[in-house]
Amino acid sequence: MKDLDATAFAEIITEPDVILLDVRTSAEYLESHIPGSFNIDFYGEYFLPDLAALDRSKSYAIYCRSGKRSNDSCQIMTELGFDDLYNLRGGIVEWVESNQQVTQ
Figure 1 (cartoon, helix red, strand yellow):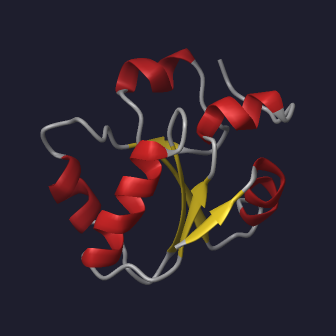
Figure 2: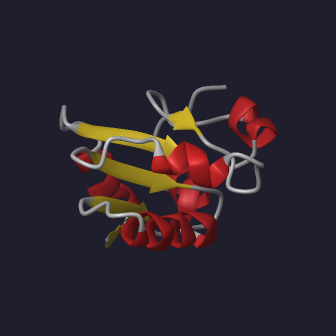
Figure 3: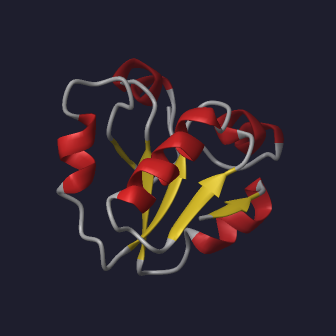
């Protein structure tokens, strides 16, 4: 896992083989999210099975509100056999403060 600031995270998610994963609740996701992301709720009943079903050969850029849930998700994904993980340090809060784009 690599911790990235908003600028580095914005660069990495432009790469075609990187999948953007939001681990906030569905309500948080619907409020606003980084364009191109998909959502798996960290607190959801199916969080672990949904993560386990993801393609381990892909790279994942993961974010949440502040960076805690995404960091925890990266640790879980590492235990599940994922190798190429990027965590947005500071979460979507830092993303917005860095004037990066979100979808409402």
